Image (spheres, rainbow, N blue to C red):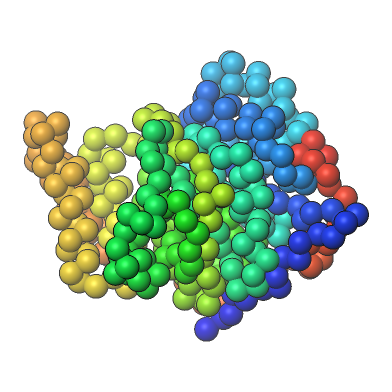
Length: 337
């Protein structure tokens, strides 16, 4: 087993600069939500230094969005991608990042104040390889420790219960939610990056990456301060398909994910039945029941046959100064490339 243990992030002493953080926003077909997300980091985020990398997979934008992106072009790294793949966009972000800690957020989020500092703090513990935080929907409240039983709390720490909308820190966490997590760049590269075999909505790619990180010895920390509101805009994003194509992609990703993480036969059966009921048997789909039924079966069959990605050999990482050493970059505007 390849160890994911890294050096602790040493908090800077007086006169020292904090470590550079890299923020990566993969985006696809988003307009105003993307602008608002970028604006948070440009105007409200108080942590310095950080760089902002936007991996844009959109073929075109509305004129207002293009004007905005042009206006901030000198302050961010805008990477115009020629592909449409969430895990590939994440890998592109890892490739471009200069910071030892890379923070991934969706293109329709509203981070809490102090967001980046909340992500950085847990890395003072050398065993922490990944940090995630709450990502509630607008108006959704977080659950307190007093709202869950002792047994549920033990299950949470044992990985038998997924709780990502909680108002208390804990570790180990079972996975980092895709719209809000950070990771040590060297660890992400060492375990092979993100699995580009996932397609479309790429459901499960974040959990598969988290599982691989934990299997390599890494610990995921859940930090309340590293929180954001996930707006979950209905259009754009990974939703490049609709109807039968969406169902086929979802079934493919789910069954590929179950194989990748070696899920039990019972869990696979429960997951497929739950998805089939939600996407095929719901009252809005009954008029296309036959088409959606076959789309689900075709996608599931493909996911069961797809060869699993190989992540056996750790990838080489660039030589870097220890995390926490002084950096020349002092703000997002200084991170021009």
